[in-house]
Every structure is written in C-alpha cells, then in structure tokens.
Amino acid sequence: MIRGKGKLIEDNFIMSPKYDFVFKYIFGNEKHKDLLIALLSDVLGVPEENFDGIEIINSELIKEFKEDKKGILDVRVRTKEGKQIDVEIQILPTDYMAERTIFYWSKMYTSQIKPGDTYDKLKKCVTINIVDFKCTPLKKLYSSYHLTEDKTGYRLTDIIEVHFLEIPKLFDEDIEKDENDPIVQWMEFLDAKSKGAMEMLAEKNKDIKKAYGLLQTISKDKKARMLYESRQAEISDQLTRIKSAEEKGESRKALEDAINFLKLGISEEIVAKGTGIPIEKIIEIKKNILQ
Image 1 (tube, rainbow, N blue to C red):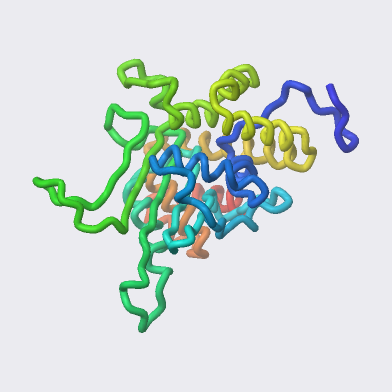
Image 2: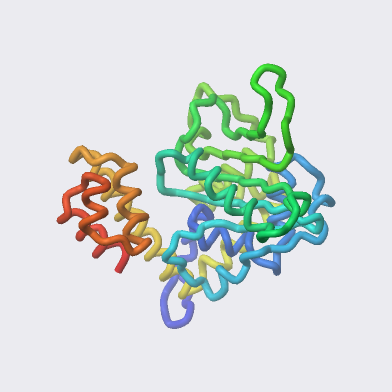
C-alpha cells in the first residue's frame, strides 16, 4: 500500500484505459501527443510522419479530470492539411451505431464551412470507433468503411472514412487474431484486466509501454481515483437500467431515446408518449441520470 494525499491507495490498483477520461488522459493530452500519433498510425495504416503538426482540438476536456455530463467521449484532432480525425471510445452498448456514427461524422464535416463558403474548403473527416460491444456482423476484430460504388468498388470520394474496433471480438474463437498486430495489441491493452496483462503487452510494444506508465501515474491520483469509481458506478447503473428495461419489454433504443430527449429538455410527458415508456419510469430516469 502507498499513501497518496491522505488516503491509502493499493499498489496493484490500475484503472481501465477504456474509461473515457482515462483514455483522454493518455491519448488526448498535448504533453504526450506521440501516443495519439502512434495509435492513429497503427489504426489508419499510415506512417507517423503523416501526423507531424497534428493539433488536438478538444484537449481542454480532460483538464483536472473533469467529468463531462453530456457524454463527450472523444479525442478530436486536426492535421496540418486540415483533415479532422475523431477517436471515440464507448463502453455502453447502443443500437443504431452506424447511424449514430454517420450523424456525428456529418456534424464534424459540415462544421468546417459557413454559409457562403465554397465546397473546396471541406476536408476529409475520419471517425474511429473503439467499442466495448459488438456492432457489426463481420468476423473481424476491426473494419474500415468508405463510400464506394456497389459493383466496381470505385471510391466516389475520399472525404469519409469510418473505422470500428470491436473489443469483445478479441474473445471469439472463430475470429483470427494476430498477436503481433499493433491494432490487436492496442485493443488488448484497452481491455486488459490486470497489471500482469498490461506488462506483457508493454514488453512487446514500446508505445504501449509508455501508455502503461501514464496509466500507472493517473491510477495513483486521488482525484482521478474518485472520479473513476464514480464513473464505474454510473456505467454499472446504466447497464443495470438497460437490462431491467429489456426484461420489462422496453427496448434499448427506446431507453436511449428517452435519455437523449430528456437531456434536450423535452418534458417527461412528451418523452413518455414518444418512447412508449411509462411516465413513472421517465421520471425515474430523469432523477437518476440527469440530476
């Protein structure tokens, strides 16, 4: 045991890098931007030199471990050529992930210009989804998507690019996994449950070794530890509510819609009518999640 800021903290305690603010601490911090570049290089399959001069647009979201109640879980960057890349990690399962991805990609894309601008100012936008649930039927750990012609495969434009890294598929025996693949190693690091597993990965990959060092640092921080435990409890509560709602016949989508509508300030009565969830349940959701 070690003593940190008046509280005993276990030597072997290590946070999961899957949790949003922990992920941002490692990959969304200007002080160690090289780790973000390494991750982008591995996932996108391009040399690290391509990311010289990269700018983290939303790095302020992680200062002092502040928790974001609106569910902003991403790290967004801009290259010196103006291309934008958004990396999002998501633990909670969600229906219509593809539609949600395109919606947020479109907001990133269209926000580049204002009325009166010409279309040549629009630059390529890339979305990387790292998810802790299965969202495609493909027998692949990770997949990438572009806008192509159905029969010939001709790429209409290069402005859109979407990637999915589906962590649970690491344990599917019928899916091929190359332990020397750096993307697989990053996925295993994000899902690692123990210091031993992380140390093994750190021996294979120098970038993961540095990420593991940062993870050890934040895991010893009292304020971060408190936020981490709060975030764990919040996610457990949401998973429990989703499971309970499904058992009662309420679809996951209806529950997600209700939460989103309430966040927009729509009245409980209208949300209940629109989702089909009883008003009593809507009031409970608002009380437990939004307040």
